[in-house]
Image (cartoon, rainbow over all chains, first blue to last red; front, side, top):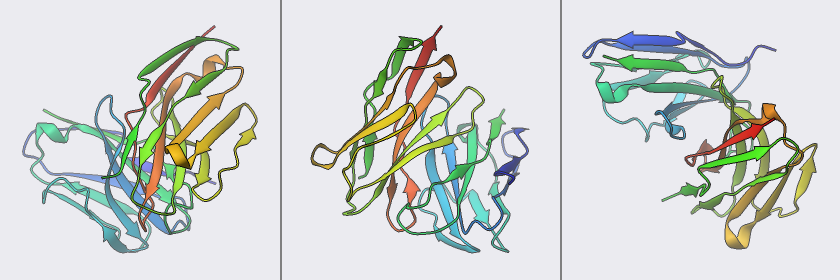
Length: 116
Length: 114
């Protein structure tokens, strides 16, 4: 019965560094989403996986952002050459099925990234 | 473009009052699902309710109820007899497209005072 977990919970990076954020979804969940939440704003969609296939990456803000889910379970969001505007909370969510949002998404606690 | 408007930025009520949170959405999808999520100060988004677009029957679940009107694209959420623990940011979010990615509004901050 574990929920979605994310690590690290907090990350401070110097501008220009690469970072990797990890998401462990609920076991057996097919769908996995990444969202970015700036301070005082609602989350914004980044990318979506169905099992290991990345079916939608329309929300990734630049080619510095890269996500993978090679075995259809754990996912990693990588940000290369971080910039100050990348500072945000990165949220991971999983759901047990697919299809137009029928299944609710369960969110992890997020990783707060601060770029200095 | 798909969009969510939560016109109320902040609401403050006294415990035991009823409070309604407004949501207006825009979508190109002919069938879709609508969600409400809660984000307490701890930061983790918590699923509250889901509604599909082809069933306008309004429901009550405990202290929560919702009013969905497809004709006006509104999906309002009511908390009855509010409690201090209800203090949080509330997000309305339609699921979009084949993936069901959520489109969030800016949220409504609810403060319930004792």
